[in-house]
Image (cartoon, rainbow, N blue to C red; front, side, top):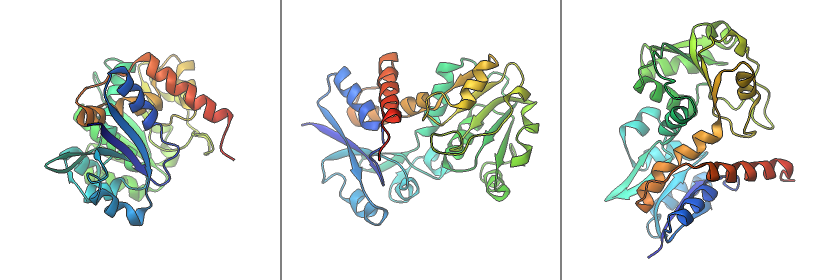
Length: 281
């Protein structure tokens, strides 16, 4: 029987997950399917309740359903700590996790080996769901201090209360000043994304051994990543995180742990490039 999984969102047409999973299904010769499911928030609970009846062995969940997915499933410690779930599978009951954490870490491991050696101070821009996943991952890798910079200070303070004393909130106008001691800078905002305001930050303040990670992947090379490379700093882009976060879901649903290959990355780059040249009207 053909095993099927899907990505559930509202909207969901923009998701690149079907392209990633279709590549892996073909590469590993697996009789499977992966689809998009556009589900409005008011119908999400009923859709999940009928997920197995619809023939699905699991699903990815994207905006705006990640918090609802957490509440409607049995989350692991990671999803519970982050406060959002993006991957669902059946194991007697509907279980969930958050693979943004491992996607973020694996992307850095691949693109900037030993980035977490002597991980003193990291600076994270943003205080939303992506930032929570990043902070959880950094704590697990032994970060000494994580400075969370956000336009709304109370949201950064909430993360200190959630994750503990290693998190230090900072105001947005302090973002350049806190870079001098940072060995890692992470953009977990939408700033710098195509169609969004630019991210104004001075990477020249970073030490020469610092690593820069941008979770934005449209464009693939954001101005932040370009500025880091211009300074000969190691940088990890958001496309790498998108690819690596998909690995565990595929393994759970289809029984094979897939590899993130240069060919797969090239496929995604071409698709994103085509979308940028022909935006929806």
